[in-house]
Length: 171
Length: 268
Image 1 (cartoon, rainbow over the protein chains, first blue to last red):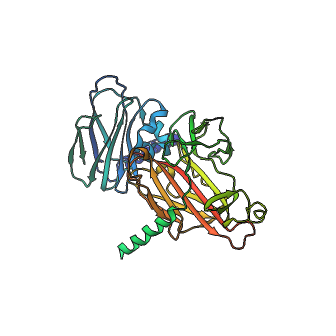
Image 2: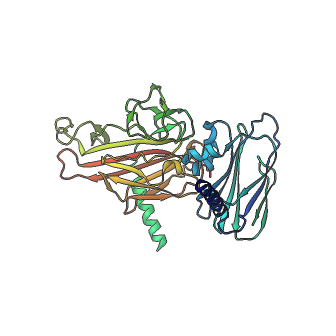
Image 3: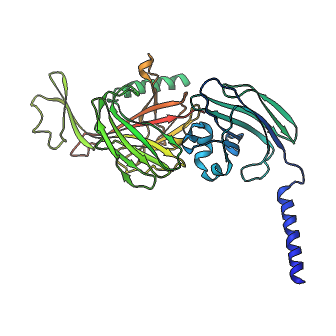
């Protein structure tokens, strides 16, 4: 009987804790939507290595959103991401790695949180998308945005490696 | 006011330039690596005033590698050609490696005879018997040159141990963090102490293919530091020199230290 009560209490405590952690301000966290496009290429084609991340107004990386890659030895070619993030955090690299993708459109959605899963504070940030392809080129896209409770939408101009990318910030 | 300062600085630079000797440098195949099970690098070793085209081979016998765990290692193999030597080395552990091809510290006596400048391997105490009778402008210097570069595999480490011998460069900005259009700071020590007015020249790769070498000339400040911003991604050679008169020394009239650092500014 006592054990049952304890179990029940623990169950509720867990539930309450979970609620508190996931929703600190009892408001829904901002969503970042990226419709990433990898451009159609002619000739020899190796799927590109791609990283996307967020830096704060001081240029400090606060969140890596995605890393599409194969072999570790080419990670260094995602130059800015490797210099700012990858080389310093092997665990993060392992945690977010997924396989490379071929040409196409990839709708992606992220919560505006840092690498530790805490909501990003209000303020100015920059979204980075870096694309590097063997025997191809490198593209780096920078899009400043604000977390201020308002919705904003951006169209990121095409590069040699990407078609137009839609990016929206939805509180 | 500003103009005055600029002129003064330019003049100082113009004078100090004459001190710069033949450049020596090492050039690793990579400055930054990512790897799961280690990586090979190769290093070119040459004496050349053309950044970064090789000219005269320097031996690789003095090449040392300071590993991230603080040990001193040697290349696994080397080859000496007429224009350059090459060294092969396997990076096993993550961290920052310092590769050097430092000269042995030595005394050198220079003098003039019939208008020609000559050099003699002798110190102040034993030069007497070796100099011709009519030698003029005799001066003995104690010299030490450092030829160095940093290579980082995965997570960087601060492999910046100093030994207090003549001129040394201590990175304030980590070499693996250097990128185009971002400020870089290096500090200089002379005999272990922060040294101001060290003459520094920084030249980007590819001088063969441009008319103006576009060498950046700087002097270290009161803290012994220089700060500059590489305009383009690429490889750079930094040449730093400093000398001090040593009136109390029985062996030399002056001490001269130089540093030849090769580094990479990454794409941003």
